[in-house]
Image (cartoon, rainbow, N blue to C red; front, side, top):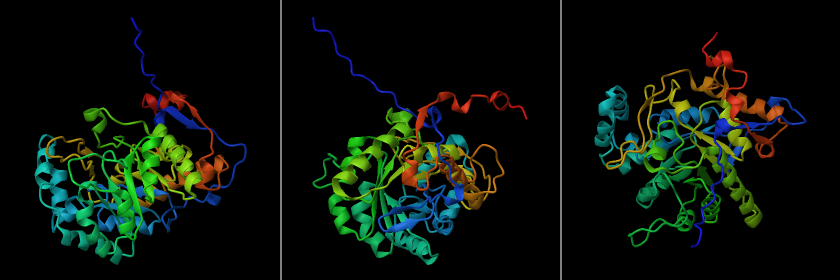
Length: 380
């Protein structure tokens, strides 16, 4: 009888299981260049606010742009379904826990209105901000002309899992090569977690890739579907695809690690693992400027048949300025994210994001508990 052969599983690592090793040379943190680019658009800081209704509305997108980062507005959320989205957001925030998912399913059943898509984009542009907007593949072809016509600067096509090749019953699905040729603005696509999927997406001509499946604080895709890869491993695999694609084509496509961030140390680890920027949701949902009233939820939460997310209460902890640049009023690393990154780059001797990609990392599950007896027992 033939002995059965088992597939070999490899170990994958998340933020809490690794640590960054300090470099042999250090530099002043203020000398670290933390800028990154999407297409020809450069951003002073490598931090993107996620396309979730509790995080980004036109006002938040403007505020984020003024700070040097980028916020992506979801065109399939309440902003483009209702004339007065603030009232709807308040209703979601006030709903009892046992009723909120059913309420959101009802709220998000309203149709997306193309005139509101254009209106929200124009509001961001009127505020002098970069207008980055997000749609799912299913609605991209329908809305793309409105998006471009309204003056959007960056188009993000996002879903739980995105690949360059998709099999469906439709006569002709969304083909990224054609989309890239059709629109005059950079196209960012996600999400993916593997080398081959990332490489395939980059070969379509897109301008950026979102990395991460199900790590977000409000996302339950990993529990519901059992899919995903911890963010450090996913980032490293996709960064390798980016590097190989650059050798192949001479074109550099940034990798943006999307989701799972709780503190500045996570941001630093994602960059060291190979990310060019990070996309953050729950931390920004805590900003005074965010539209979620201290709540945060994933955009799959109101799915009509299979909700893959939950509303979480994150509270309001400070201003956007504090979260990005301090001064911090907390001790757990959820504020002054840019300062944390600059400091980590300084102790690693990395003058640029690309140099930070060369920082040594080690497997270190004890990094969050070693020597922290008094913190863990709640002592002051």
